[in-house]
Length: 419
Image 1 (cartoon, rainbow, N blue to C red):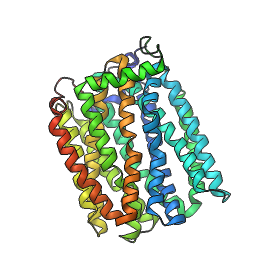
Image 2 (image 1 turned 180 degrees about the vertical axis):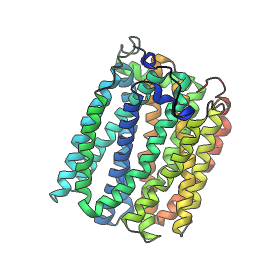
Image 3 (image 1 turned 90 degrees about the vertical axis):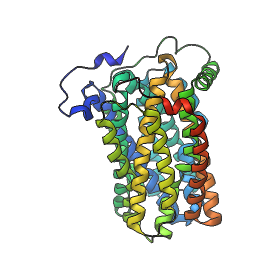
Image 4 (image 1 turned 90 degrees about the horizontal axis):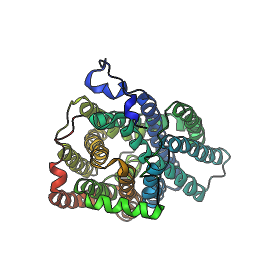
């Protein structure tokens, strides 16, 4: 069934910015995503701060990010195949129950004082698996629902929710952690995932295309890799994403360490600092969502990547709170341009039968984030968190420049589809 048939043409009260909400059911996906993202950033901050208090080790803090992202690398391709082979609504529902169980498990161990680092490794990895399971199915489901004309607007609005959550999650974590502890925070999130499950029950089913739902799994995996390699635009997006997750985004694991050791902050002000890039991304995503037609999608994607790398390199040298906040805000602007166009370029470039698998290969590239978390954690243990971020971002600028110079198809794409 083509979910785009559910769209009803009505004069948009919110103007161009909110036009995706005039597709029936989109608000449910958006609201569920908003909570999902808030929970992700809240549990990541709460657990990183908990580990920092327990161990005072930058490397152990980086391992929390590693556990959260590792399933993307291991299972990204497989979850992309699942997005093409199974009803995407059922996949989304299963992910909510999975997260509720894992969050409740961590929360109970913390509240009973039984949490060991190996417990954390297992259960945070379980949370990461649900992320790998959810993302390709949810983004493909949104495309099925919205169609190509509004996909940039829908992705921008999805990122508005994600970026609002990037602000809300750490702030709530910083406020709740002293009051109810990390265990209480995780139990609150477990209840929220069950509420999300009920919200998604109201979505229409999304059965797979017959051509995409047959054949051996290994052959489907191979077809996805070959398809992406032969598609210059998708290949360019995947390679840039790989570089960003290896050398750019790992800075997020070091922000609590820099806040505590360099800026001398407690959990409340650290939560606010972690919200800075979310505020920048939220603002930029609203601007992208308000645009009727984003013609230079590839250039906007590349520019966002470069801005992010440059901003975090400068952040690593800052010893002032307000300057650090401003630089992370600028990094968030880069994240919004990069991330909004990332999914839009893949979804609009891939064929209907290959869309989930193309998103799965993108998940594989995102899955290199754990390796980035490890390398920055090892580097921080040797030379300090600030210098580790500077070295990683500096290398990222150089590699990114070379990749974008070669990816001519990516830089030229974007004039064909109105959003």
